[in-house]
Each structure stands twice: as structure tokens, then as C-alpha cells.
Length: 235
Image (cartoon, rainbow, N blue to C red):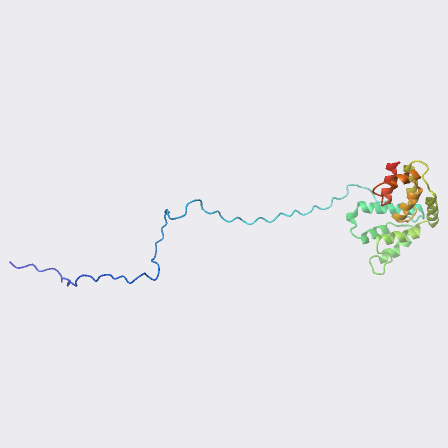
């Protein structure tokens, strides 16, 4: 019986594989595979907190605008040029009205325009040149104080001022402090004295007992108003 022939060509036997010989520690660490699963080698405990956010910028609230005056008063009538006490009264009332409505007059220029435009009849001839030059470098009136000085020089009564000065220097307290203050303030309106001169004259006219009580105070009055208040409280 004939032998069966093998299918295909048989591979020759090459012998046993060569042994693996270690050449020492490898130069780099072997690759490690990432393990997505938690293991006991990871630190335990809660996850670290996220860094705190920077503090918010402080909210700045803009300051409210000044509250307008709630006093509604018509401005005085135009000045007609009468010399004397009426001129002083008109000027005082006009400046008081400007103070109540100061938002309409942010600068002296607006105040001066308002005052000069409210002069008529004989006083208009005096006001017109000043109004025409207003705002220029050659204007004779640049401030409200300069207007007061020149206005009173033109329409004030020098005889009345001189008489008021004589009366106030001879005025003394003969009854209550309130009555003395009233008389003093009436004469004061005719004068252009500063506060220090008025305070000195008022103190001279006080009753000697009131002067003594005020002198014993720890805090001495420094203005005419403070001196008048002190005189009323001690009497």
C-alpha cells in the first residue's frame, strides 16, 4: 500500500529559541497605562475646592443733585431810583431772592445781569453802561460785592449813613436785650460796617451786668450773632 504524501511543504526545524539575556536597568521608566477607574492608590477625601472668585467692584452710587428750593416767591419789583433806605431795602430783597433761586445763577455774571436788568426810570441810566460792558475785561463791575459798593455809592443816602453811625454809637441798653437788639439792627442796616466793628459797638452798649455775665463764659462769642444770642440768654 503506498504511503500518503503530506500536503504542502513542511517547515524545517530551526532548533530551540535563544535565551533572553538581561542587559541591566532600562534607561527610562516603562510606559504605564492610564487607569480610568479609581483605585486605592489615589488620595481619598473631597475634591479640592475651586479658587475663590475675585471680590466684586464696589457699587458707586452717584450723589443726588441738590434739592431745589421749595420756597416760591416772586422777585421784588424793579428799582426806580429812589435814594436812601428804599435803595438798601431793594438790594437786600433782591440778593435774598437770588439766594433762594441760586440754581438759576451759577456765576456772578448771571446775578449782575439780573440786578442791572431790574432797574428802571432814573436808575436805568446808571445801569445801562454797566450792563453794556458786563463780561468784558474793562467792566467796572466784575463781582456782586463791587455792584453793592457802587450801587450804594450812587443811591445810598450819605447823610442817613452818617446819622445812623452817630445814633448807633450813642445807643445803650435801657430795658431788655431784645429791645436793644431791635434798635441796634435797625441802625445797622444803614451802615456798611464789618462784623468786628458791629460786635464791638454792640458790646459797648450792653448793660454792665450783662457784659459781666458774658465775660465769665468759658467760650466767648466770636460774631455779632453769637454775642446777641449770649446777651439774650443771660438777661
